[in-house]
Image (cartoon, rainbow, N blue to C red; front, top):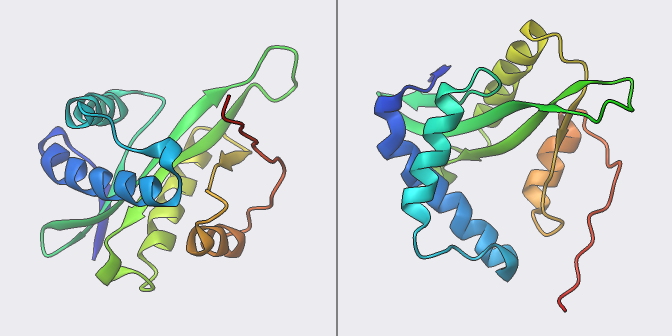
Length: 154
């Protein structure tokens, strides 16, 4: 298994994986059901992440096949706060048959190195309350719950 930065030539495989995580989120919560033009928007989003100086995508490869990815990026705080920039894990996904093999950990460690080169001290992420495996992974990685996001249908 190899971890590397994604290239534009990886977009096809990344879109397939992003569709899997989108479907998973849709099953957890109907709020995240996929839109009709999602493939076009997913491609546009992933392309932006690959090209941006404040974001990247790391992929895990097994025999030249992408089996997982992570999207770390840099976010900016309001100027009223001492912390001006922080890291954010936008998304992480590993194909089911490759889970529990430390691939997500390797992807996060690569993101951590990338954040360190950018002098980022804080990293934040969101994980759905029903995603028990995700919560367990992030807690094992040292993340703590600091906020609760609440929603109401009007």
